[in-house]
Image 1 (cartoon, rainbow, N blue to C red):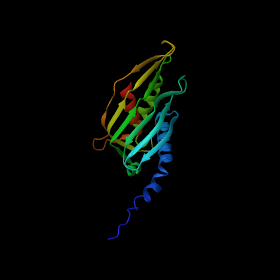
Image 2: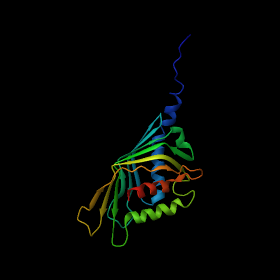
Image 3: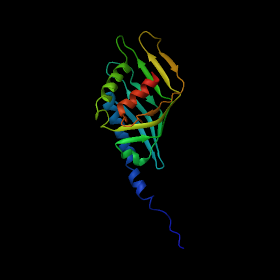
Image 4: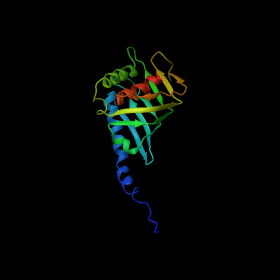
Length: 195
């Protein structure tokens, strides 16, 4: 019997995966900006063939009128998802790990940056088809590890007040039948878990 190397999977996967990182980066940034109404940045995306997506330096800007440049930053969020699942209208994600997220809550005399952002997220999550082009998410486990919250206000000391929170682990987001979560709702759940 002659041995034939199994090369057929190696040919299509790289061709499919090569354009995925720029496409994922563009999709995350545009869904994020549409959801919160402020600039959203993502430095890099890596896709693992066996089912992992690694994002580098995801950040959300602050609304107009606030001093802080960023309202939220994650050094590296990782998600366990099938690369084929990225193309589905409803993405089912087994596990997301958000390590060391930093949320900055800035108070001016009348409102906070996150008050403005949450109003935007709630409004977008109530309107089907908005806030991410209709993409829906089912997240079985969301782990938020070593989060910090920085409070800034004219009434607080110069550097603000920094709180280190315990790990947070919401489960089964959008997993009930017919209740997949739109992107704005996913962002709102993460923010509410931290605030």
